[in-house]
Image (cartoon, rainbow, N blue to C red; front, side):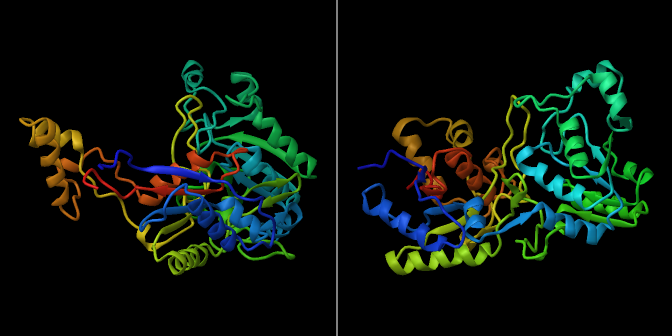
Length: 396
């Protein structure tokens, strides 16, 4: 009988994972139990994804604000520092800011506007036009900003992040000053020691600051790259990808991800004879049309994945074939012609007209986004995602 279902993404319910538990074995047991219950049959090229949060938790990859402070002080000197371009997030940045402020005497907090890097808005873009403010050139003090636009309120949470962040700095014993600018070099008018907190633009920001004469430039990815006073760490991403754990600590992005996914792939192959792909995923890479928030606040969608997930899709556009190559066909004849075309398509379609509009993104970014949307970020209790049929096409 002809199969009527294509790609299926399933959230697998799992126990609550605690520090030190053997997550690899828990993942394997969960998948095999779900398959044995009749939910699905394990097949070659299925995709098993594990959320980064649960891996980091099992690794006990945590740090306190005191440990962050110690590293910030050691690397930036402990006096006046510029903290520039943080995202507006209590979950992602607030505890990091506590540690940063605790490691300095004064913090010049420079916020990008009208929005942060991932789309959290401080002010509506239309208001900038109405007030004749150019965000590409104008530098605003907090006083000027609030005279022009009033207190900032986040679209969904209602948080006034400007004063919230300023309050955090002061609570940790540092003097605080807030300015608004989109030019990283602006901060050098206040201090030559800078911690840049942007995520995806951090390499360019660091380069511009160094070229402009900064004495010390660190990114979030330079803090806690090694253990400090017994802390967790991430040798590649530092504080990037971290989340709030408690009011005084964070959970860092996981480490040893490649060993983790390769190990699970090997064990499942031994147990079932099937070769599935395995990945660790965090944020998806998609944008909310209402809040204008780009979801990806992690440094990457997937910090570890098996080799079968390398590359981008190599697909043809069915509607293009139907409207052009086989415009004179319909029904079963059209179906047969398209199926035959797919079977003999080029191994690398590149910029061929027949491939245009087929989402030229990395497989890990596409699949990771699907996983993030499937698992959600709340109480679904499905930190493992099992995907089938992703690599199928119309002929399968």
